[in-house]
Image 1 (tube, helix red, strand yellow):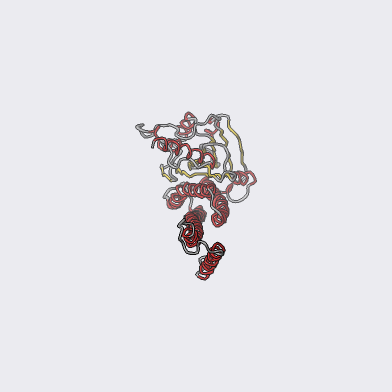
Image 2 (cartoon, helix red, strand yellow):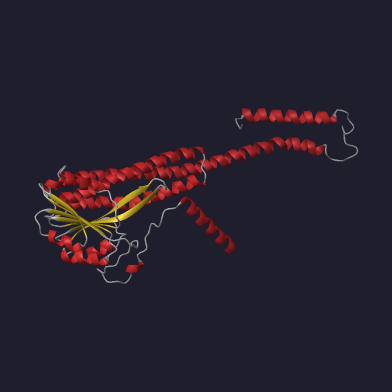
Length: 375
């Protein structure tokens, strides 16, 4: 029994390696066990790259953009009348996170959540700051796999600080609008910038869901024609991908809804109409996600039905063949007995008569099967 279990585990690992199964849904956070609240410890993927710090400082008429060599270069922008956007790529350096928290008076629990990269999307009000957690997704079209990272956004009086796990994001259109003074971003405050970041992230979900939807439609054709091991694992992989997305998209509705209803002077009344629009986008994303999940569930049922139908077809053919040969085998068995005084044993036309009887019986049975639509 133990040999069987070991061989099954080895085969399962080979299958997962071959079809590149998605990673864990529940991330390990045992490093935080037993520590007091507010302890700064990074629970995400261990990084060795340097932390990249960039910032925009702008108003309606002017803007400046710079990549800082140290976090201290951004400290002087805290009290300026202009709007400042500080973006941190890489949160594995606890010293940098601690310095930001100390200078901008960020709550220790907020800093802890920034470093804890498996946060549920949420919004917290810390009086002078709003802290928003969302997730950013990237779709690998070659592997049909979703990669995710946590994005933390801190909204202050006239500044926004965004924290990302690694370089690369979907915020380049916002950067271009700031550089070229397009839209309302340069004419509005930090709350509008925060709305723009959320809106861009939610719009990126539409692109990912569209690509997953195209793959699911292709899988439907495969399931209807033939279901091999690769098709089954592709279905399972998309089911896991949608499960990952669901974990983030459902709480995101609460985040956007709470952002609208927060009673704080950090969010201006003029921004509410834009937050209402992004809330509508969130509902559309959730509806699309649920539609795709229903399609995947239906595809699993279709796969089981197709496999059952193919098995029934095979069993029907085998049963008909067996039924067809039962009377022929009976005749051959009777005349194959070696009794000396059997009737027709010495008959000159006995061999041809028995073969003719077999052919007639076979033809009659085939005609009968077709008349009953069994063939």
